[in-house]
Image (cartoon, rainbow, N blue to C red; front, side, top):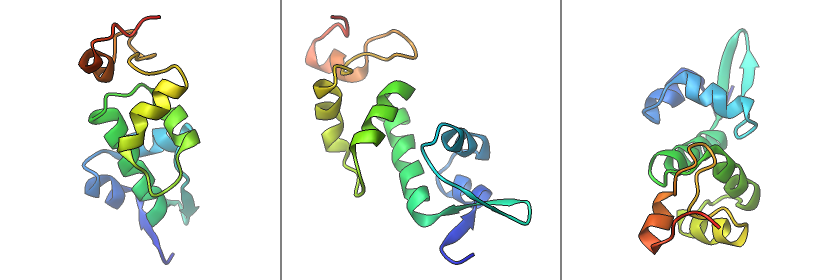
Length: 114
């Protein structure tokens, strides 16, 4: 399948595991293709997975925040726009998954609450 790579190869390149990428697929964040019992990811979806990992690991975003960012942004993705997007939609500085203030709220001196 030209332009596609096996999911395990993409996971290795992104320094993550197949389970994480399959979770992204189940959430509807990336698309995969299956052929002869193997799962493949297109190059653009590998790029999207890399961005999602950045949002989760480096920016510390919750799944709800990631969902919002992905619904607003289109490639090429820009992490520089993330804080603005979250502020505009009232999700800045809070993590729905943990209930703790996000890193951005702490930097801005906010408590993450309303």
